[in-house]
Image 1 (cartoon, helix red, strand yellow):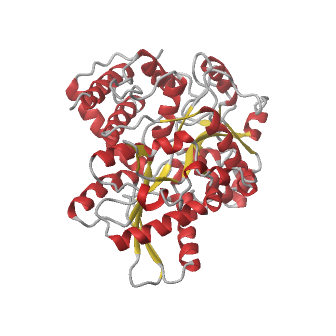
Image 2 (image 1 turned 90 degrees about the vertical axis):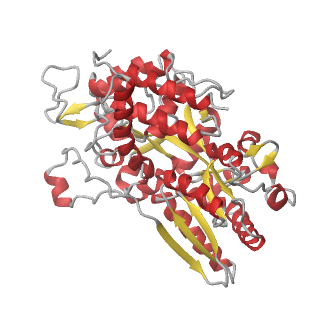
Image 3 (image 1 turned 30 degrees about the horizontal axis):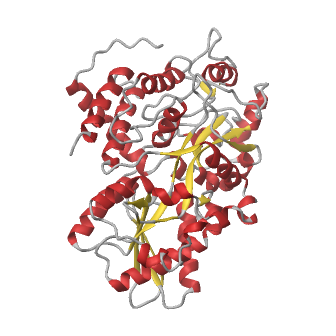
Length: 477
């Protein structure tokens, strides 16, 4: 393990967490998978410097609300979502299709960063000015339901059969059900997939179809793949960690990477009964220490510090062997067809000592906020049914439709990344445990992990203090 001697008291932790959370909020609103790709180099420049590592991108601007309007009608359906980037573009196309096919309808779509959306919705409901519908993740359903922010959908969509309950897996319907009431309509399953660059791996003399089976194997494998500008590997004399040309892996978006890793190490963020924080356990600390060592001891993963290029930037220049990133990354590959040709999709490779394979998955869900008037409910229900019925098209964004009939369709099976994601999610996908304070819990563990991996605070102390804070949240009445 890397030597870490710095002491951490509660005041230091809170200060470090505040610093980490500042950067984290920007990442959370625009993870690597949803950032616009950087401009491609010219052919001449690419020929002149074919092995140059990507430059760190400029700091992202503060996220702003994106508003799009479709169709014409006396009253429009107002919809709030956090769907941005490549999958957001597909979603906006669908809204245009909806208004084109349904004369006399109009939609106003407002896109926010997810964290902004989760803060804005309670305020709007309390003020009596909610949107007609929203799209958010299944992990917030219990929290929003307990806060009285959502209208049950049984009598609106399910009882009439407009949304067929038997066209979803039981766990998916269970994820949107609170106290026997179905609060949302599941739209997709989404999460991390391992995008494997076959060229980079073959160039290292390795087999891209035979990835390392556990954490120890990965370190040995990663040292063979990672190389600096002088052709040195991390376990060779003279290797320069400040001049790495090819990395083995990238930590990408912590919100999916770290829960996926924890699941591989045999635990979740909180226990299944929602009573116990688990991020201060030995297994959780070992998991984050493993990532720390990949970055700062073995130098096979870029350090998680400001100014380091994102996963997309490394991958698109053949400077990354494996990219853990979202099922929504299909848009990135469409924009980079050369790298798409040499990429295959696989379940996440295991980093755990025992080789356990697992990854976090999520569900985008559609809901109607509490307080929406009858005419708004009618408009929202119409749009929600149409989006659910046309989820095959949504699959072109890379997301796996929640509807089973759509998953089995040839359209979905013909999309290489969606097919791979569907197979992976059905076998090793595990959602986070929901909680009425899920967002607060998420922000707390993210700050602790971010502070640890940015070397602001030692790993063990940061996770233990974060664990205390999560436990305090769970212990509230």
